[in-house]
Image (cartoon, rainbow, N blue to C red):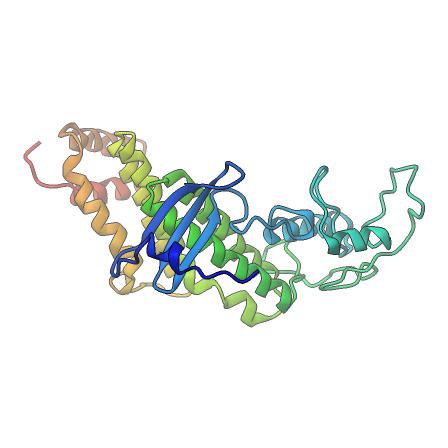
Length: 313
């Protein structure tokens, strides 16, 4: 059906210079997020995969690939994992089920061919044992093909659009959920991609996701009137950024990281909101750390004291 969207777009004019977001109720009664763009708009579900798809019967491509990895680690064999119980079956998955391409269940007496070998489809065949290890010291094998990684990246982009919109809507729990989820994508690709380029492709976005997650955690804490928890969330985000930027470098240039500076500015703005007793509390904790000869903690506490404003307290 061909339909002119001009009337719909005119009801919600685009405003340059801002992220235009609204929450509506869908025809099924579920909330939907809409983002107005200059030439149209995006519409996303507020939970689950933003476009509502169920790839391979799973809630997302990420969930499918994580289930696939679990199966490889348990059996040493790469084959399509069965969809979760009760999951809707799409045409692709239904075809696989009808041809017996799902992993046989040796504990199922009704399995017509429990010894059948399966076809992995993407990646390695089911009769191939995955031997190549992942990152040094890790257990994740290299099992993600370039097509697998591309699908994960495209899906992560959907979640990026949603968590940016959720931040505008001040749904901080949703931002925390989606940024944490996209961090799993980065970790999975870095550990499990076959091609080096796929292992590195998403790493450029890690600082931004770390910053957005810390910002959402701090904003939620402030919403709950928990200033100390907000600063703790920011400090943890700064520590995570510092650790990541320090990989392969003795002294990272933190001043060049926009994400690090954004979190630091947020922390500087929050410190004056702390009660005056915070400095006394930090001094007591410093004294206790020195008494216990916990010099690493003492160094951290000294840094926190230096960052507090000089109020004479």
